[in-house]
Image (cartoon, rainbow, N blue to C red):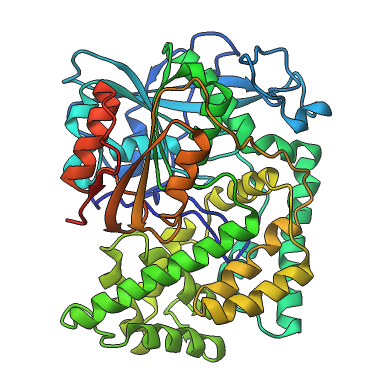
Length: 531
């Protein structure tokens, strides 16, 4: 089995721009069978060992898998469901689209045969937005040797994974044709000419129109605040008085929103790979451009110092830029006829920067591409895109687009995006133009906005906010910003590379375990070394 790898679900220059993470699926997803429990009723759990078997090929030793589905109101603000004291109503609820109707949320519960002194449930979310929490829970329960959760945590908690509304098995949003995703991923990451830029806008407009035609005034209901209210329904359904939660990347935004809405119902939240909820769409995209440039500089330095493991040393940056430029005019063709255009090369680079272990894989892929073999490039890019060998995509990016754009109230004009593209080309030459043009996706989105709250979580206990200094997708600067916004956030720093930190090293693992199990907060200013 491959080691579990957390990767981003932030599609920069294609259909979506986001900061988040997801786990690549190793096989088609298994549906969760059975009738969904109506709102407010206890779910009926059914054994589902077929889920890990289809994802990984087997079940984890000593683990029991059970699945269920629950129903939640499509519009919490427009429903008769109880709202926590002090919670603000969702703007989307004023029109009450979907009032009285429900979404189905799929859950998986995993218990260790070694469980003792059970504390409760640990709800996990991989981010994205659009990542499957059901898949993530499966991967994380294969143990520390595969990058999964530590035994100490598995022995004290039920692990609960859920697919958020619109994602995977939970009333999925499905409105982007595979051909359009191929076109988006393969598109020039820096469409410099006006004609090329206009064609990119037209592609995004077509995608937005297709989703608008299918879902109409339901689109705002996929936003983060609605999903955070679903989390409280999950908490109640699994029988926990208070929530214990592990959220990665976009999952930190989801967890932070929950903490603001339901501060008295928080037991412990670990928010790893922090998203700053107060930043604008433009600020978030520029932060990612800066973060990826920084991570790429670190990769370039690693190559220069490890030439035996990096066939594109000593100047990896020049080699990658050359590969992208060549792909714009003469893309290498694979045996099946698929062309490794500049977009696919760019997303191979993006994919590889989420873990330090991906650096050598990128170097080998670029070297092979120069030799006429694009398989390594496609392997990296397809894992990021959740594209299978038949050219079929999961609904990761359909959901990613619907959620991100539902959250975003201030969408930049095309003229402003064009200005940023030129400006960021100078400041962040490899990643800036793609992050700027990626803003087009929400500009061309038809759905109304339903922004999430951005305030304090007064009344909540200490919340652990974990940041990685070399994180490209959720740059470290967002970690203290999120902690400060919540008012009860406590920062834990990993001086490492890649996207997210837990459980990467003993220092991080011990600190997070102590918090989850004993509610022990790390000392102020705790920093864990890279190794």
